[in-house]
Amino acid sequence: MQNSGYHRVEQPEIANVLMFNTCAVRENAEQKVWERLKKIKSMLDNHPERRWRQRASVGVLGCMAERLKKKLLETDRLVDFVAGPDAYRDIPNLLKAVESGQKAMNVQLSLEETYADVAPVRFDGNGVSAYISIMRGCNNMCSYCVVPFTRGRERSRTLQSIVEEVKDLSARGYREITLLGQNVNSYWDQTYAEGSGYLPYPGFNNIYKSRHGSGARFIDLLDKVSAVDSRIRIRFTSPHPKDFPPQLLQLIAERPNLCKSLHMPAQSGSSSVLARMRRGYTREAYMQLIEEAKSTIPGLSISTDIITGFCGETEEEHKETLSLLEEVKFNQVVFLPPTAGSVSG
Image (cartoon, rainbow, N blue to C red; front, side, top):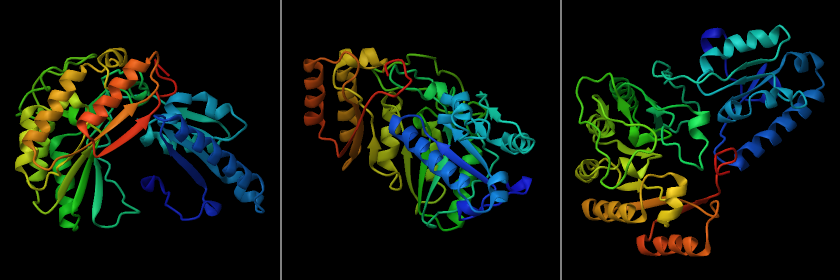
């Protein structure tokens, strides 16, 4: 956008373009966007300067744009353009179409786009903590989740581009970095000449697609990133429990700056529910992972996600989840409903 002559302003009243970056994982998040769009429309319609009203364009970006597509453009003139999560480079072209009086949309998903060459502009950073996106998409196809359909298939940035970004943040004085991805520990740079190979945790399997092949894996990335600056704490989210091989747990235990806090989404404590969710593991396999993680990493803090009221869940299956919570004693639990628009939702 900057290369096309746009710059950020602080007040929406003086903006020529208003963009909403959205999420579709939770229905509540989408509802908030609809409410904001209606408020913006009211502000535009009642603004005293009609000239500003005529030249302001409203766009919806991200997962919600990918999921709802034309509905956003057709609903009461709330939106002028729509851009899916892999179409951000096309926003200047979409705005040109809007300026000519057209509605514009690009929701094409990509198998390659990672935005690795786009340096993030950190407007609201505190100079201490930063986020680095390392991969996009998900191949797991869990029955309750819409992410593979809104974010597309997994693809990862090159290891070297991530290491260079960490070096830059280190030079600027940052002291905490969180690595981000829809399935962050499935990271796989297939261009890397060396690598450890794919090692899932025993008892877990891949429902959708084999991940075997050469290249750098998440353990290789953590090894390189944590070695850049020992003063920088490294975190990551959001992972899948299948991609915590023992070697990864051992690395986290050995490196002081790899935070001893892991998010391990269980989703359910019932093996029968997990099978309907297409999670690729049983309660027993998950418990084995938890036990090894705790024994390998002293003082480990574990958080999890739990989906309550999953399709067809019985009282007995619900009680199995309650017993899992009691047995593991998680440090934090996030309770979620199934995703709207997913196979189960």
